[in-house]
Amino acid sequence: MNDRDLEIVRARPGWTRVLPWIGKTPSLTRRQWRVLGLLGTAELFESYDLGLLTLALLQIQAGLGVAEHEIGSLVSLVRLGVLPALLAGILADRFGRRRLLLGTVLAFTLTTFMTAFVQTPAQFAGVQFLTRACLYAETSLAVVVLAEELSARDRGWGLGVLGALGALGHGVAALVFAFVELLPFGWRALYALGALPLLAIAWLRRGLPETERFAQTRAQRPERWFQPVLALLRMYPGRLALLLAAVLPVEFVSITASTFMAKTLQEVHGWSPAGVTVLYVVGGALAIVGNVAAGLWSDRIGRRATVAVLVVAYGGACFGFYNSAGWSVAPLWIAMIFASQGAAVLFKVLGSELFPTSYRSTASVVRAAVGTLFGSLGLWLESQLYPVAGSHGAVITWLLPLLALTLLVAWRLPETATRELEEIAPER
Image (cartoon, rainbow, N blue to C red; front, side, top):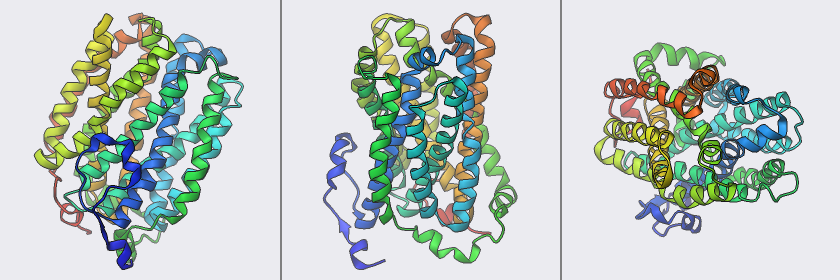
């Protein structure tokens, strides 16, 4: 690393102007700002793809002829793309984070574009399965890279900004979704447009450096490809079990709840696509603050306390959103997104902090994979309970008590705020 990379940049880079709410920024080096910018812009456009599935679910369902009782199962199959992402985490611990991040963004660009041309539900599920595999690998590795690049005092803030940029991608998707009924080819055009910026990001990411922490642990680099998995299970099995036990109830509920938000606004409350866009853009701008706020709060009062507050807030807002009508729907939606995004950021932070550098990528992807699998299970269960409950909102309400399990388990996790990674999880 040269002296220019180590130079402290006191002025905020220009790209931070799209996030005016992040307030006072820490003094980061030129290298740290560059890494945050490269990872954050990719996160923005990857979240655009994530947002499209929930925003345009009604239009995709109609265009592909998916039955109402099958829509939850279709989305759950798409989310199973997290399984191949496990391999990316293992390879990143073997060959480096940079190579895998370059490969995943290229593959993600291709599959996003291919989605615009699918003709059947099976084709949509297959292509989006591959898209999600790249996306889950990309986002999990981005968290690891940023955690390894930032100091202990800035780690929560930085990962909150990364999450905020991802949330901004949902806002971009919402803006484009307003024209879904006007664009040629409807929802297909939304996917085709989303692939274009990713090409530029793939080109810019050539300058992404390998993390110093990974470079310093080359001696511990695993000789066998499955060694990081064995190390994860042998060295800190208690931490892994507690982390998953805290994450799984939230994923089980939140993935199902978020999938049906835009559909509920349109079908139950009679909102137009343009109205949904206004809520997602204006309300979402307020909700995005939850990402940065969660990182800042957790740096000050601790990860565990912040998780508890956000999970309680999410449960209350989700119950209100799916069981109310009229003007209250909008603020409840904002509160739900604020809390869910903040909690998601903290679980990503914990997943990268609690384990050593030699298998940190594997641990991060395992957390994402198992959480997403439970989220897919929640969607599958929603499809089974829908005929009994009679509405998606009723099923989601039935699932909310599971969030209490997260509150019981989270307090047993080690506190990681303001501690260096080597202190939290030394190599064994």
